[in-house]
Length: 134
Image (cartoon, rainbow, N blue to C red):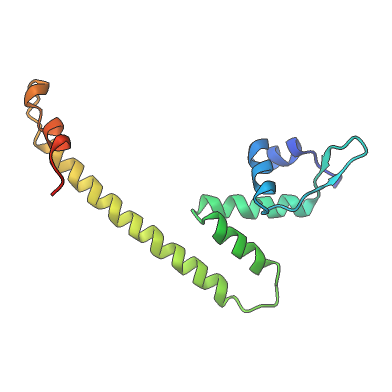
């Protein structure tokens, strides 16, 4: 496979060119070689690494977690305990967010349920938002 331009790399991964540049600046993608015309020249390894980063980000891993996972992925002979720990920590964070969103949903449903569809001056939703925190 020939070297890819940043546009080629972006198209092949479904990312935007700005995203590729961002991940380079963040240190998640190594700087590519440059052509004689000073264009970036990406290799298959860049494609694989960017796909890894994008998939991890879609799963909600933070940039720091992705950085750690990439470091671990580069050490193929290591036990995967550290990878498992990062994934379990992230799963706990996701479960906490789900619980927070469920509480938010219940509170919103309760506020909406008190609505009597009158005028704004008597609106229970507005009243509820303006109330002092409990």
